[in-house]
Image 1: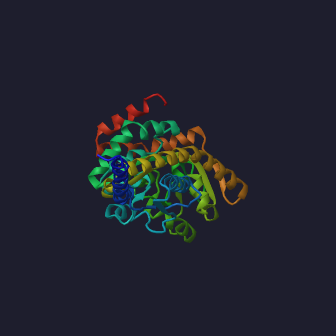
Image 2: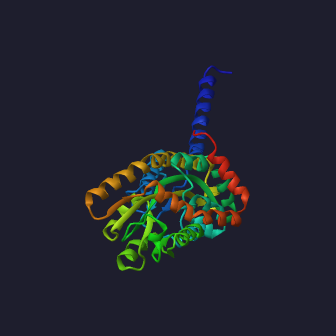
Image 3: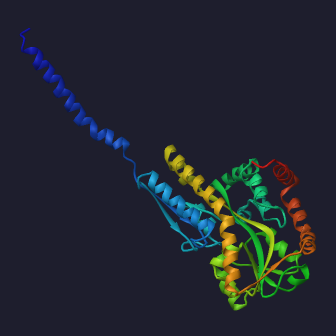
Length: 344
């Protein structure tokens, strides 16, 4: 073979390699290119609340970590859907993620979630997290599959207080009042046990209903009471700490399973960080809202004595018994087991 054949052969190999690279590069590029994803996240409260801030933090994390390929559209304040239709919208795929209060799950066939609505169940948030972040919380989420949903995480908005145009410190104080409630059988039973009449209304309608006298009072964490301007239409707030208000972030199962595994992981991890932040700021925001409320001098603030608290607790015991009959004693045993666990 002539000596010049070697450089020609080498050149041919280089040319074939370059040709192959040129042909394959677009294929590799196609393989690595992902279609953009838009995730629609709807919720019913103001942006400057623990839930609203969690949603904003989640959006920022997802968009940064995906390089903008995954966009999170957050719709606060019931802009798209309210209390009455957000769960149905999620099941139909009209939105991709919602963060309803735990009360919402009872009316879609999951009454066991109403365990967390029981009055005077928890002493503090460490009790709550023994339940929601443990095996019982996971068991609750497992039941969502029956409704085509996937649970991604729990978080807190703190403890609820009672408001009206008079102090609410004993069962007698509730007599005859029309009290706005969420669509929760447990919460409605709680109001009846106290002598009030429950009126189910969407959260977005509550302030107007209070202002116009459609209802006389309601229950809320102080952060919601303050950010929704309820202090302008309620003369008295009683610090009862009688109930817990928590949320579950849930997504549509079809949407979730359609995502590629690494996108699910990115979204899930971003959400866990956002929910950790939300759990940490819930207490701070409620304390800040209470301080602002005191400074505003628009609403009288009342604290319960130990004997007043005991009388309220006694009055609502039938609510616990009714739920136990409805969902079965095994759920109550699981609840007691969770509460008996040491703090993490």
